Image 1 (tube, rainbow, N blue to C red):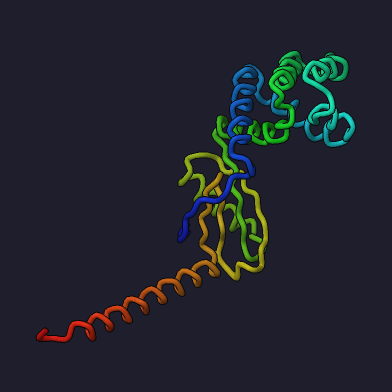
Image 2 (cartoon, rainbow, N blue to C red; image 1 turned 45 degrees about the vertical axis):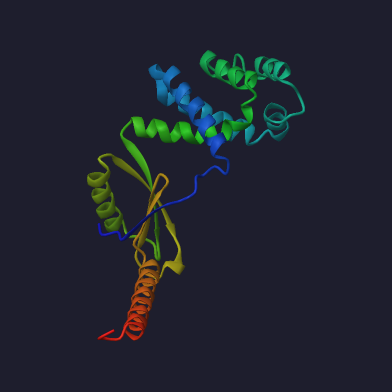
Length: 211
């Protein structure tokens, strides 16, 4: 796969410190759930998506600032205990004790990504000018499987402004092989070459032969 340009993009979190803290909790949660990682991931995802996502009042109480840490622990005991595993209940209480419940959605995202990495899988975002055929996707999957040494999980998106080519995102790194980017790079190289020629011309005029 011939992909021309490589650059770093901003993190999915606006606050790098929040991302760093969320990652610590995500890894600790997976380490504690070593006997049943799949179940732990599903339980956390279900809680964030199905419970917090549908119960806005509960979400506000749990992750907001209207009640203190002790009251949040009591709320977890009253609402979650008996309906979730002891591991998950304890995890929520640890977050409450350290005032980190607001990070739950970010922790959930990082838990999913980290669990996939540990299983030898990796998410790859593909952005193309037009929808990719099944044959094209399989060809890309095969190339990525070789280059990344893992099983890629492909997430596709169409962006007609690309004109042509493909943009591949793996984690925080973007490989941009789109025609739009290639034209931009060509213009930059031509402009640089033109400026160099002008500068050389100036140098010849300012230092005539024989002086």
